[in-house]
Image (cartoon, rainbow, N blue to C red; front, side):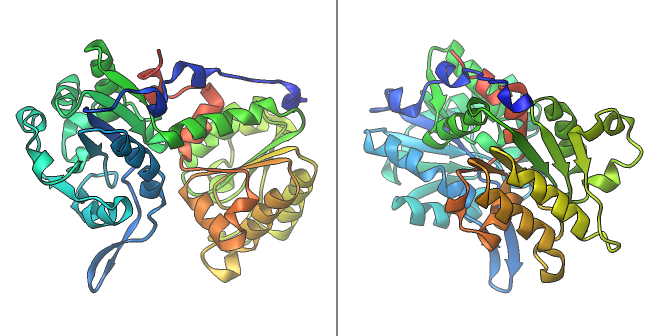
Length: 362
């Protein structure tokens, strides 16, 4: 069976943890995942879920407590990059217990002048995706960013499958300049806990759902050779209709059926999926089975998540939607690991590496 094949990528051995970096007296760039969900309210824009930022706090605190001169937090908000990260300044100050200076327009000279030392030890830069060079992985844009520090720490596992400047070109440039680069505390845990999936002998099941059909269906196909069963729910069965690739996989992939309204998987699919989960040693849940936020279309997601929390030896959730569903239907502690990455976690499981890891590996 597929679950008996042990697959160890050994990537963790090639990464340097922030614990092993010399940060004393240094200006340290921390690439964090700032892309938190927000909503408009009568009082302004409000952060709905702080989790992605909260996971970076221990790394920033560790760096400051070990005598860093300054921590420069960089990241993006939104796919289009139109929202300013200044929204996060009060939240970061509250979580860190530090004054956080915000820099709306940054350049190389401003980064190196050390002027922020008077305002506080933490600087938050503007949304990187306001600059085309970020998504283009532009070396020149990376050069501007590199002027902000002598040490680089990636604490954004969830975006490290993207070959963007702050994830790839920046650490590559800093390595060439013989500056220190490494990963944060949470990033290191992500690699360890996801790689653990392949260290456990026995039956393994991957459950994929949600609405991001193109990426999820691709992972369902490629990972079917590494899991004993791949269970497909959410909107994905609709998008996969007529696909020869899935038909050629036979019973390796079980394509769920949706209710007539298309908002949840049907009862027969729920029973079939739970049956698979009951006999597995490892369950990986990546996405909801339906529109779980509404009570009348939540049963599929609820039953699958509760089964994954109850039966397997090792249960892993991947991505923000899965984490939200977990918070709604079970205690987070009932899963052995909940990854901040959806696509990043699946790509790591598939390839054993990510562009952001490759840029750091020694």
